[in-house]
Image (tube, rainbow, N blue to C red; front, side, top):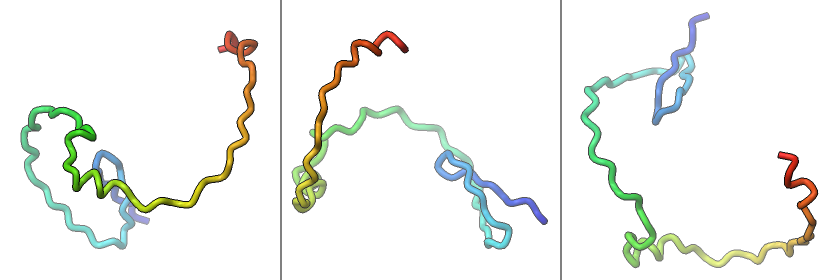
Length: 77
């Protein structure tokens, strides 16, 4: 039995079955650009912010919250 081929896809190894047709395009990797600033909510336009908000969902179940004293186990770790 022939060994399965493995390819890198977005930094992850992905196994490809033998029977799968395969086309591999090989190119020259360019020089990475400068590291940009992280995207923040303030960077979004009003339209983009509106797209993030969906319809109001059903209310969730009520949580039963119990207060416990963990001071006795704080020093175990």
